[in-house]
Length: 439
Image (tube, rainbow, N blue to C red; front, side, top):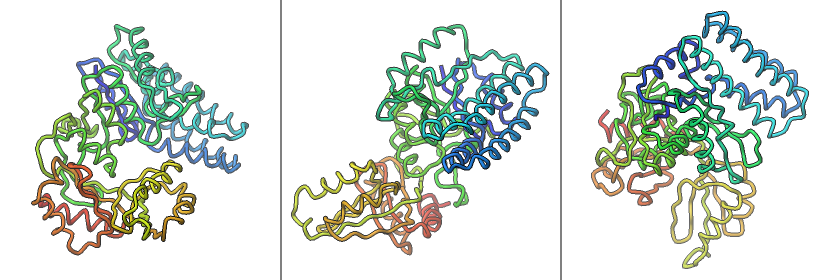
């Protein structure tokens, strides 16, 4: 059995949803189809939540009505028969009635999770209605019945596996299933989610739970490109990556794939394909256990980085100094991306500034603190890149006129990371594209 995940742009218009239906019905192997919310829906639901959190129920009501108008137009173009149209309208009525009811309820974070879940519930129900109208038999599997995270917000894979396989056994003759990405229940049984990009995560977790033959991630781009096509001309898709290479690229900014979606596939050795719904015949990118060869595969950039430098003469010849620094970030649940050290200073980067003031307050006793905001991590990824002298030479020759704030080298044989001011990001990506790929 395969897992086929389709993102928001892949189902964001009626004709795109029609195309997805054609893709999955042509699939010869049984499949579970994972859908995101229609493009724009999650953002709209986030804004509704913000309005309610601020006590502005009139604004929330206007936003709900605007979203309903969008869905009314969508449904009118999605299905045509009176029976299917009636069913689709009933689905809209159910979920938008819920959104209007919450205007009368006190806002809470738990309620906000319920609001955010409406997008995936709507997309899967409407898609199932269209499949039924066209005579395609598919079982709608409610993700809230089997997707669960524990008290640490980590997926409970044993429980997911048990519950999902039990549901599949109930429909042992079915070949096609549809379920929601992103949404789940938490350890308290409340509606929750896997955060932004969580539909990729859902697909990978389901692939691990059923030992799928393959996980396909369908988006609006033909695989993972060797550089950011939004700011660099002449980028090309990468045909094959190892799990390690893909994980580095996803974590350091490649938007096509959610970073957390790699480890379940890697742990259970499930191949992942990145494919394009707009160009279904394109090869895309295959991610497997083995790399396709040595050398640079791709470059990724991660924005919104802040560099923190702690300078202290007490660090010289002192043991335990770094441990105490790291404990501060652990205390405030703030991950560190890059780190470099010298005899009297340590520099590190973070992308989560929620607890920055608390962190800085606790770091002050260790020495003087310097901050650099608006930084970008640029990562050069490929098998054995960190141990290939010619690659190192090309990187630094390409960036002779770019001021580098930090360099992370040796932590991984698959990755060399550079920290530059965000104002130099485009220049860095373009010059590396020419120097490393001759493009």
